[in-house]
Image 1 (cartoon, rainbow, N blue to C red):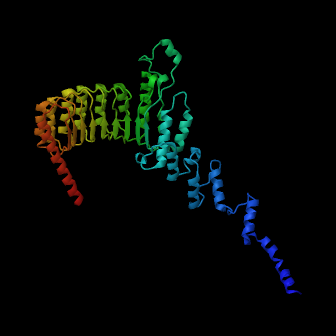
Image 2 (image 1 turned 120 degrees about the vertical axis):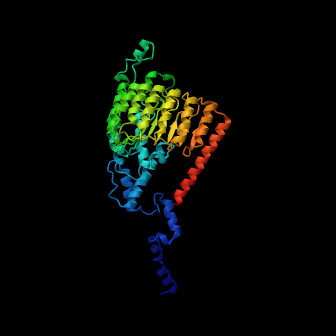
Image 3 (image 1 turned 30 degrees about the vertical axis):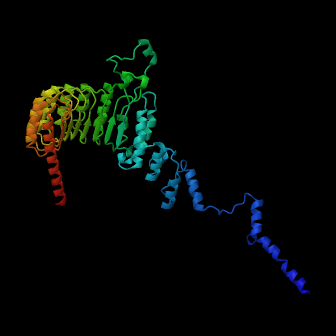
Length: 454
């Protein structure tokens, strides 16, 4: 056989071999891709990834999480939608990363330091807050709110309710009357707000309640009806607070709480086992309410902080509180600024500090105090060993009153802060008092440093 023919004969099988293996010929590989645009060089997805995508896509209908390995569980949580119903995620998902995504996708400002550093707690507290603030009695679905609390109430520690909406009024009757002013005896169920008693029982770890019975941003729809704290509201809230044995802080402010309502509320917390802070600021509490507060101060309630700022407590009310302070051994902070104590009430409160050994902070600003009160302040400065902060600003102590306080402060070593702005004392007395305060502050700092070294 001719060698050339033999060579040609032997080389012919090479072509089919190349055709069977396109990867061996780069030109043919490119030609195949060009001719078949649906063909891809991408590898087939891993079976685990396909399973994870399936789990995520069907999570609401068939939630699978705890049975997965940790690495697969983390992947599912990363891909899980924040729009999934709380009925599925509330008790099943504890991952903080997921709840962080839920919070940041819903609110532009998120500060977990206000919620114990926990994203899940923050989500449920703010979610419940919005539901309550937008709840309209007799119109909103109470079952929806209750269902949410059943799911997430165990994660709620703090309820801050900035507004409570009343029922929708009958606009026809309003037009017939030609006025939006309700009668005083119209304090009926029609204007009652949400009953907290039915909600607190689903929040087993509730510690703080901050609530205002009023409407924010009502604009041109303003009416005093929107700011009513009815007798029925007070009764319901009082019973709810009494039943919530874990509650430590109650702030009921800017709600037009009067004497009768204050008395009713206080009667329910006289033996409360955990209430340590009560705030009734910016209300209408006067003498009878102050007497009830006096009973609270000598009760079994472990109250340590009391805020009665901007009420109507007069000299008689100050006398009732002062008398109770002589026996009280728990309270550390008392705020009575913007009341009507005058000298008689101020003297009663201040004289109690001669024997009281627990109060650390006292605010008597804007109470029309005068020189007689300054005289007692001087006595307190000499004899009291527990008071550290005293606010007397916006009173009429006068120059003689300033000298009296200065004399008392010369023998005091514990008061670290005293606000005497706009009290008409002389600049010389104010300067000397500030120097004495600085001396006490320096001594306190040195003592703290010595104890730390020890």
